[in-house]
Image (cartoon, rainbow, N blue to C red; front, side):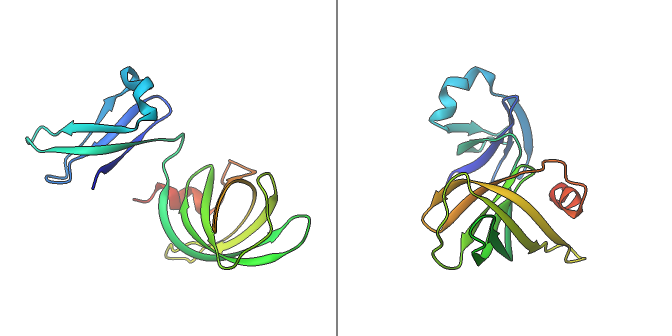
Length: 155
């Protein structure tokens, strides 16, 4: 299985060797055209070679398994969700049942973080991606003055 490498908006890749766990950063601006292909072969200083998949995002995603709920802004339909990943700009979740929503719809999301305090969050979001039961959303407000800011800083 290929290692996942986060590539920042400035084309800096953060690599981690699956064998020795050493990590390093590398400027990948010379690979701008190959980032669409997103597969590279890496050579660690320890001598281990491994394949990697490049993931270019403005903000890294943190994997999650958080339960919550949504309410549709206009239709007021409600449903349960399972948040699978979260970043500074948005999150991805799985719907618990089939729902009627479209790209561009606004939702209100309620969920608790799995931090020691079990922090409650309410976020207004816009639907950006729908893939069967998976929904990707973008936060309407990017300045997080709540528990999400410190939650995303944790490793």
